[in-house]
Image (tube, rainbow, N blue to C red; front, side, top):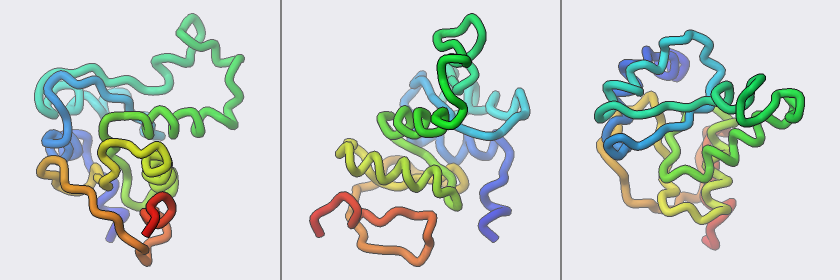
Amino acid sequence: GIEKRMFIPGAQTAKQVASLLLPGEKLYISTDETSPGFFDALREQAGGPREVFQWRDFVKAGGVVDPASVSYRIGGLIEQVVCAAGRVFIGSEASTFSGFITRLRGYMNATDKSIYYHSNMNNGSVQYKPWKTTPKYMVESSAMWEDI
């Protein structure tokens, strides 16, 4: 099922998303994954070495943002905007969090509004084509931002 496809090792994710990433391109990852080395493969194997950043790299005592200045209630919202503003967004298939980032990218008229999932083998960027609806409630409909 979908849950089995979503919960995959970091090395498999790196392999499946490598074609969507530019060499040396920095990544921001919004995740609830807690294993410290889980994303090492994305740093080293997804098209070459790259820097990978997460919320905890910026919001920490002595960091760019003091955790006391950001309510935990809006951290996820901030991360959604950060992800929506990226060159490309690669999400999780059964995630309404990822779905809303897709919608934000539509509202922002992102250059690449296509949907990519870390759990699928991606073979580079695809031509964006609006779609009306889907039976999967986690997947946004482009009707939310397109005049179709």
